[in-house]
Image 1: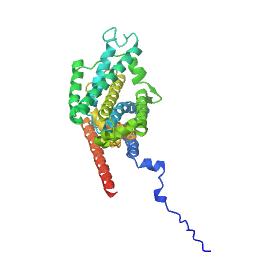
Image 2: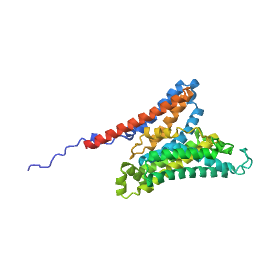
Image 3: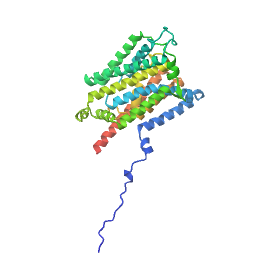
Image 4: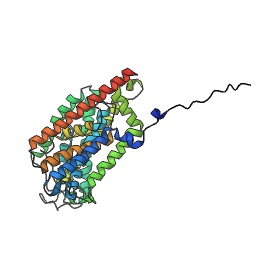
Length: 355
């Protein structure tokens, strides 16, 4: 009797096997930005006098600066994920810090005396609440203009940038507000766990939370769906306007928190030091892999992108490079990030056509 059973031929599925996790990670934009960060740290350390760039004190200062840029970059990354651009982040930070400082100063018992606060802890909490609430309200105004008035986000936030800056200057008369509680710096801004400042720890925790939101929650999925196609998201039943309003509120609250951190760093407002904050946030988010046209958010990329922006600026300062060149370098990095973004979009469109 003839055996008619077919011989099983093993299928070569080696090309279909998923690459190891480390290989998949190395293919991401975030991984290469991290490598670039490490290379720049090595280069600036070697070029700086007495290797001062690689010192523990400078590393702590870098982390403190990164904490503010990162908060703005995280908020912007979430907004970009839904196809919204925000130019007003720096103005929001400044206005929030001004309101927070004014609230804290209202509890001062002796004008000009930073030690004349009856309960500094409660005063600081009031300042924190005021700064975050101001940032959130600023974001809500942006959201109402963008989502409900239908104005382009670039135009809307360009307008609120000017308004926010003007209001901050009116409230302060153009002069920084000082003599805030001393403990504001000693307990928060200049306090650290090892060499990691408290504000940096807070920023990292927020980044981890938003990473989980984007990766695992419906909120993150809806954000990406809106960024991919707002009309399709509406047809799928997503309340697009309400979601956009929530995202702008989130971005505003993070800017308000960054404004409060600014107060903890310097013990006063810094009205003139945030003109390029929006540029740094855009650079961090986009070079990290978040798409300008929406539909993709890279929280890890925003973290390493924020570090890149700060490392570049700090390294150039330590090397004595003119501030004019610093602006040129950061702007050039942003252009490179946008070109990489365009190339990635072109590859995706070609892959879709090939399929």
